[in-house]
Length: 496
Image (cartoon, rainbow, N blue to C red; front, side, top):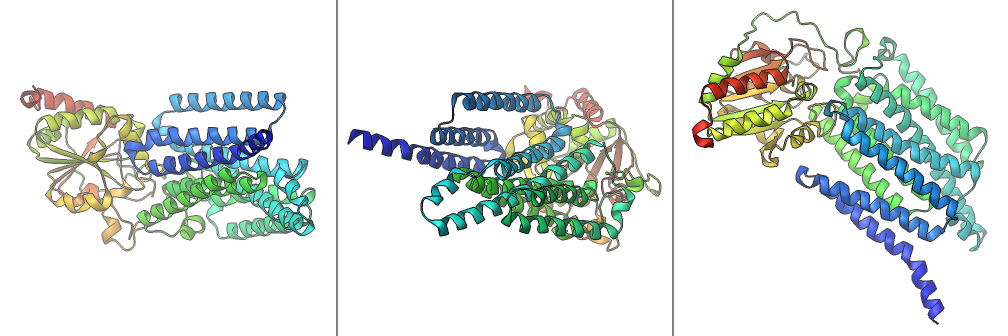
């Protein structure tokens, strides 16, 4: 009797662990929706995945050597993650995210390949005892799951590596990828991959598996390579979704309920975020993937760089003039962009904001959904500098406030503040929701030069009468403003 009870408890224990892990993972993903709770949410998600591994080991009870291999692998992966998190600068975070997406896709790909080449799951073995019909159905589901794991996993791996290399500047956007002939190549690869999927349902190994692997890998390259730098936030979100889909398929392969749930949640969250990014750019996902590469730039370089010629009414100013305007301002809005991240100027910006607040100035930060090179890039950047979360204001909320704003300081942002998106129907940005900084009383734009942003076009904001350019590195300019304001005595009395 006692032995039977213990066996029952032992059999239910893995399911109980999985249930707790699923709940913790759901709470973790929910917590990622807010910057304030994101750090603890990551901890919950990590704990959930640790419990998932523990539950699987309890169920399978592998030999000691397997335990040792798992421990070594977990330690190596954990150490690699820790070193990456501590050493990668904020400017390289988009590349890191792309690499992590690729790592998730690689894990699912290897699971699918491993099961296809070396045997099925415990779930299939258990189904065999229930009868032939169940076995046939289970085998079909398993083979379809293997096919999806390989197909989506391979696309995620190669697509993420291409995205990382483009963001890092290792590869350019080749001119031939902008021709319509690329669609024919990608369609042929997709057809070859689908042929591999169909054949794989009948034969889980052999030639169909390698056809699917090669075609899917090349398709990941073919789809991602033409995409320009301005579309990278969308691409990273989509690749994140792909990694979730691949993980869910791998969950069916190995019979892990948690992996299925986790992959489904990540896949759905990635798709929702992708849609948010597309809406923020006024572009459809099909247009991003198959249309012209926004930001492919001259010479094929991602990020364009653009021609500095063509501006005729540029007004520049010194830090002293900007400091005088800030001293008198009652309301100041900062617009962070990728240039702020490149200069590592977030801490200087936070210090400047605190000085202005000590002077009684109302300060906030306007956050565009696609500012930077990945979703939430500016939020993470400013959180690193301990900027209060309530000061980070989304585009739809801040836009009505610009007409009553005394000073706007744009720091390295370009396309997301271009008023042509509202007024010039011939502009590639036309219809894209932008931060309406042109409605403010005075605008200072901090840039190294008049070079174009990732969309590769001129910015009409630069020539408006209320706009003045502050040329220079963002960190140097902000430090100069701090020095000027301190010399003026700004914040001294109220701070005391």
